[in-house]
Length: 286
Image 1 (cartoon, helix red, strand yellow):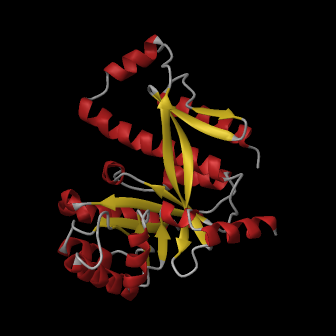
Image 2 (cartoon, one colour; image 1 turned 90 degrees about the horizontal axis):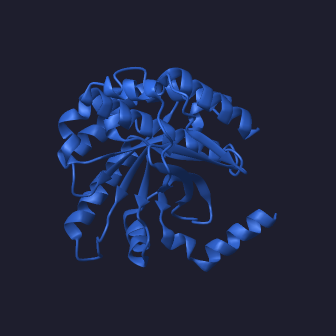
Image 3 (spheres, one colour; image 1 turned 30 degrees about the horizontal axis):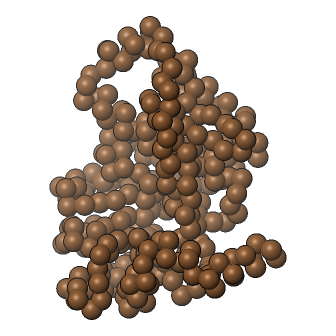
């Protein structure tokens, strides 16, 4: 798979859609970056591992690296387009465009380095889901197919907090649209947010993964939070989804993962375990 034709196609499509001469995707060597205003976006991939066997990687979460970019001069017609935008519509469109740009950059960078059977977890802002009124995932589907992948390789990950509780039905509808197109769905909840609403959301939507970040949770002091985690884990098991413990950066996170019985873990703690690194090196050498 050659990246240059893909990058050129995507730049051409962007120029036509937005009526601009600006080309946001840049290929340097084998790395693709995206330009969004004064910033340059690139990719960082961190592994998602099985809890029982941390050397086994089932996929990667894509994260953005951000650096500054010297903004080029705008042409007069581009300035006119910007000034003609309705302010509220422009904010919504900006969120949608930024989300799409990030996901496209990640997908292009993921292609050369990772086996196709693994999954890439692409974060989608809840405001993007709310801002797109129908056919969620249709825009991105063409890009996925051109990359030689299928939507089943893609996990749409969104983070929900209590502030989105009153929009859960709209979010449910949007995520269901992704699901119908073959994407896998992951939702991240904070232990303290959502309360009963998160239980309802998990129960109603056919999720593939449910993620939790426990932050500074300590054992055995935070028994109330642990009880809640256990309740949520039982519910996740009941719907046939897999649970992911995120922010597993310290030894105590490993203890929580074992105590609650999470299926998958994601965090820097496991990257620092000597036997995990040794097993990964052996697998690469083989």
